[in-house]
Image (cartoon, rainbow, N blue to C red; front, side, top):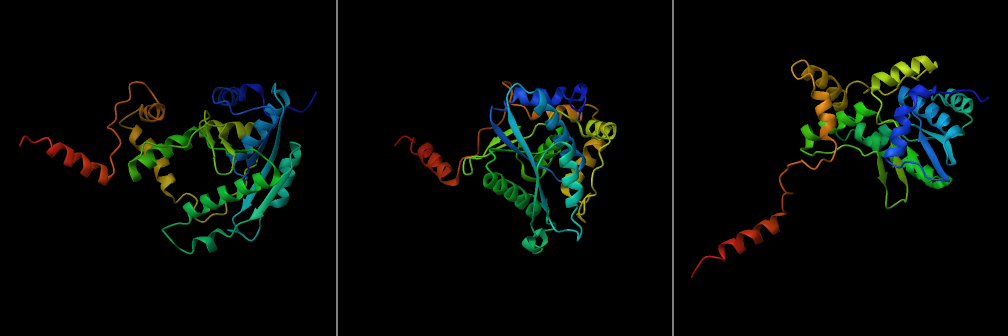
Length: 262
């Protein structure tokens, strides 16, 4: 019998996401964005387990961006981790701080943008058609609240995103897992997440949302569940129409006043 990477009881939410959102197709080649953190390590282990039993064949490999925040990039540790699951590991350097050049308060946006771009570029270069990210349910809810409070948009990342320009498809198989679950499962599996070398870790807007939600839950116990429900498209949604562009609004004014009886 092959080694069990993740027990079946921990895979139900992964199977649900894969099936509900149609994340897998026969012959898929999926590149996992492996940072070395708890979420991407669990995603790697879980997909490697799923791969053994899925009714359709698909390929897996891992890719890590070295953002050059630290002199020591744990290449050996990451390769050893991937080898345990029979997966090839790729990595490249991206000098985030140089690209950022102190534009804005923190390099977080720049870092995320170039990490995504590098991963997508590598996926195309290697012939992969999908990229798997390890965002979990808390990430989605926090992003939803962050967008609402900072940009006035009801928006979060989707389970599946098709990139028309590159032809790649992004999938997020962990979206039904709470962060606390992943932490506990990781301990049970004996995973050893690598320390995040970023000096801004824990000092971001996302961290503020992570702390704001439990603070608000003291007075609104169901807040998290309500935010999660609000992320779903529902027939009962009642929102204002999209704001028209200025030119369209001017045209509406002209047409309205042209109705005046002469």
